[in-house]
Length: 105
Image 1 (spheres, rainbow, N blue to C red):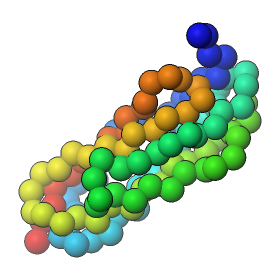
Image 2: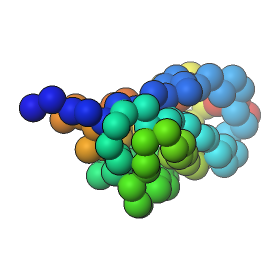
Image 3: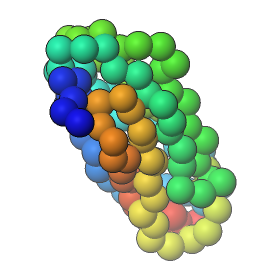
Image 4: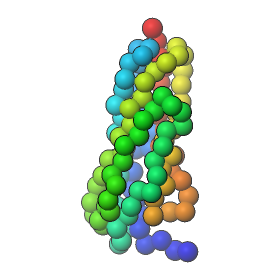
């Protein structure tokens, strides 16, 4: 099935650098609907319980931009790489949005 909706992400990989343990980090992944039809986000979820995701619930019209926000709470010292899985009406595949860094005391 051909899709006439297309999403263009500003970034799909955020580098957070050093994050203090138990610190709450707010992340934003912004995209633009570059297609010809409205796009709806069907699902967006974090790869673990340490990430809470919020996403726009309505249609994103062609040419419009929107942001998926995530709150990440660091729990263990060390390097990390997490992701947010996003499912939209623009693709049958999930889009993976990554964020990484190092948790320090």
